Amino acid sequence: MTLKYRKSSSSKSRVYSLARKVEHIKYKKQAKRERIIGPKEYRQHLLETRLQEQEPEPKSRITRKSSKADIIKAKTLIKSLGLDTVSRESIPQEPTILDKEKYLKPIIKMGELEIPEMEVDLSNTEKPIVSFPKLNSGIKPDIKPASESYIIAIPSYNRPDLIQVKTLALLHRHSIPANKINIFVANQEQYDLYKAKVPTWLYGKLVIGVIGLRNQRNFIMNYYPEGTHLVQMDDDLDKIMELIIQPHSIRYSAASRISNRVSRKSSKSARQMRQIADLDGFITRAFEICKEKGIFLWGVYPLANARFMSPKMTTDLRFIVGPFWGTINRHRPDLRITIDEKENAERTLQHYTIDGAVLRFNNVGIETRYYKNKGGMQDEGKDRKDEALKSVYYLHNKYPKLTKIYLGKKSGVPEIRMLTHSA
View 1 (cartoon, helix red, strand yellow):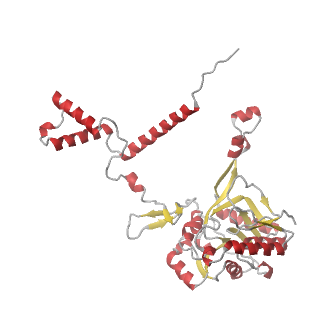
View 2 (cartoon, rainbow, N blue to C red):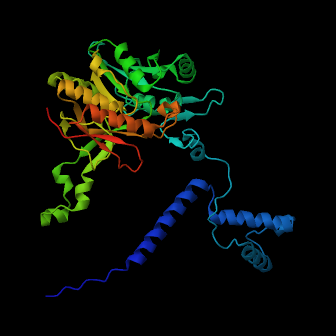
């Protein structure tokens, strides 16, 4: 028995057909959004206007009782004006509510940076209202007593605008209480700048520290008493993401279930990224695990990429990235940071050699722009690649059995890599 199948149309014609459908849908939506009257009524309106300009007498206007000569004259005028076809140009009209809504939530641009997270209400031109949308606005966070809670410290330098639309906006969207957030600035001049520009309802304290990243990190550690659950964040964090793996039954398509094979497409679609649902709960749980396992430093995956991340929590030697990490505070001389560049690598190696473990959540990652945002260490006037090279050789000489030097990055920034090692 032979089966006959209908020949399918060529891929080229299918693409053209799909493109025409998409264009037609776009045009219909645009016409529905921008036009108050239909194209026929609009052409009739233009025709009557032109006839009035040529023959201002009211008798010359087209009516239902027009003579044949008037109809022929009208048709000739329609063709000469090009009104016999529908124009795709938008009809000029007064702005509707749909047009006005675009200006209530603009995209604020800072140089090359686009920040769509902020909401600005311009209804009051004298005092515009700036706010940040919350991810879980209906849920009130469970604030624990100060002894069991944590503190978020944000060292910042010359970034009073960026910190508002980045890290502070991120924390506000996740309903982190402002009294847990402290900003550390370099000097009195920076204090006055941040005090004038950053709204006070976005943070708890503004503290004058010292200039230089390593000095500021050491200052923050000494500022809080021992045993404090301390989280440190950079001032330019975009998002904190988590890896979601779909259940086994969802991964397989109908064809793959029959053939007992998993296609590449279905296996990739099983791993997805989303913004972390409960940031407050994640931080609290991270410190609880540290206390259970006797670990004093925890961190997250350096990037938010589902291809490389995993749902595992590790305690061996893994790099704890600097933009987002937590520690149970200790005032130890051997935990003082001695370099500006690669200070996060030095911190990781210090804690691992002392405690024999560092905790890293490989299912949670961050979105940020390394080495690119203005302000911060970029404004210190140093050659960061040269400083990174010095730091890399310094760390390798100090920890030769735990590290190796890598100079093959496309950006040209030297890196220190940590060897797989379990205490």
